[in-house]
Structure formats: C-alpha cells, structure tokens
Image 1 (cartoon, rainbow, N blue to C red):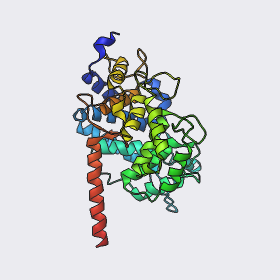
Image 2 (image 1 turned 135 degrees about the vertical axis):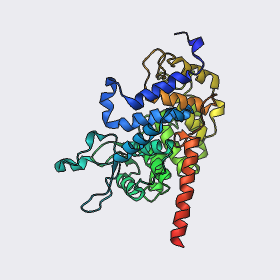
Image 3 (image 1 turned 90 degrees about the vertical axis):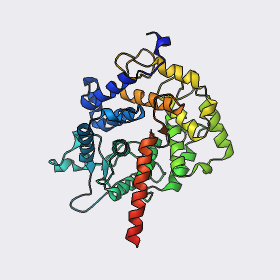
Image 4 (image 1 turned 60 degrees about the horizontal axis):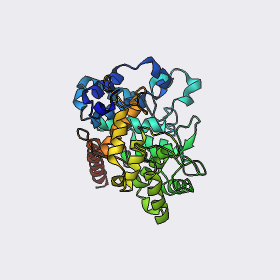
Length: 356
C-alpha cells in the first residue's frame, strides 16, 4: 500500500464499513456474539464522529433502539430485586424460559455503558431506561476495595469497570450507586512507581487503564485528589508513550487505539498539545484501508470496528478535518453530549416540579 497516498480520509469507505457492521456481521466475529452491543457502539459512534448519522435510515435507527431496549434487564418480578439490572450484550443469554439459569440474565457494566451511548448517539430520550434500577445495578457491583465487577454472575473486577460505572452514573445523572470516595482511593492505589495507572494496585501501568482512571476522576470531579507530583509524573509517562503513534506500555508496539486512550488522557490533563500531532496522524493513516474502509491496529493488517472507531476518535482529538469533536471523558461526540445535557436539564426541571 502506498502510505504517501493514504493520508487523506477515505470518508465514504469508512461510512460503508460501519454500515455493513450494523446490517450483517462476518463469521469471524461469531466469538463476540455475547458482546454484540460493543460492536454496535463502535459502528454507531464511528458514523457519528464521521458526521454521517444521516446514513442511518429512520427504520434502522428505530430497529437499533428497540434492540437495545430489549436487552435491558428489569427488576425481579417476584421480589423487586434490582441488583441484576442493566443491559446485556446480546440476546444470546436471554433465558426467560429457562428458570434454573435465570441468574445469568443480568446486566453487564460495559454493555450498559455502551448501550446508553448508542441510545444517545441515535437521539433517544432515554425515557424507557429504568434509571433507578440501573443505578441499583451499578451499586451492587462495587466491591469493598472501591472497584467494580462487570456483572454479578462472576467475573473480573478492575479499572475498566470503574470507568464504565462512572459513565453510567454520569449519563443517568445519579451518583447514589457509586461510592466516589472508595473509587478515588482505588484509582490512587493503582498508580505505579512510574506514575502510570494499572488495572489494579501493583500491576503494570497501561495506557487504556490510565484513561479509565483519569476519565473517572474527571467525571467525579476528583482530579484534584492527585498530588502535583502524581500529575506531573502522569503527564511525563503519557507523553513518553508516543513513538510516531502511541503505545500502551513501554517497549510495546505502537497501536492505533492508543491514539485515543493516551490522547484522551493527555486531553483530560490539558497536555495533548505537547504531543506530535503530525507523527500521530501519519501513523493512524498508515493503518487505513482505502479500499473497503476501516483502520487496523498496525499497518497492513486486518481492520476491525474497534480500531476504526478509536482511530477516528484519536484523529478527532487532534482536530482532523471532517470529523465531529469528541467529548473525551465519555468517549462520545460533542453532538451526543449536548443531547445528554438537554436530557439532564429536562430531568432536573421535572425533579423540581415534583418537589413543588
């Protein structure tokens, strides 16, 4: 591939690329069937950042919204328990007709976060979201250490799900299910000797989990809990992740997705302008497929929806022409974020009327 000719946005091809994933999935993605919502999130968000939401017909928009709502887990019909509430990743584990396995029908934090983001990008008013139940579902997943599990049915708990819980709480405008003090303490304990942030305390610092931690602190207004030494160390660690594009850890290959994870972390700390925009842009464009659309993690490898969206989001952060602006904390477009703010204002006014 001639990389010199590959440094302009193949906008039309990328739009078609994401639209294909919204209509039919290749067999290679069958192993991701239980997390189909994340594929839809990357595809819808990708179209959004491309400014191409008009490509989604009203019929397709409504079908996606209805599909997301069908994945919402409601309170237990027998006792009203809300601890399992949230959104599932697909209909694969919809087992209403199999009572012995009902405990597997529960929300997953990452699917709840990405499901809500899809609804926002599509302009839904979230009126059918059981906000109280989702908040209780988030609350049930926080551990004594302050981090969050992904689901009650048994799984790992780490910084990724702290971030998802913070995003869900922010979107719902309700922090009653999120112990901010405990979560902040967990983040600070996960800062390494090199000032990067790991998935859990005493593990290796990582660009993705550093983003999750910083975005959580930003969403909860807790960035000031970091000491000056920690902030300066973080800035240095993040800036040192740039080679041409960005890597996730020292001595690891550069990867397209870190143009967002590390780029957004620097943006949160108001340091992105000190990175080399040109080198970052050149690397991301080297991974672009101008024939069928999409971006890959490395040049001359297969594209996928995640790296395509995160590559576009990373380019948006550095002001690439033709892309909508990204709100880094929530990883949605400013357009979707403005829609969310209007919903918050509506909910606040409704609450005030109820008090009166």
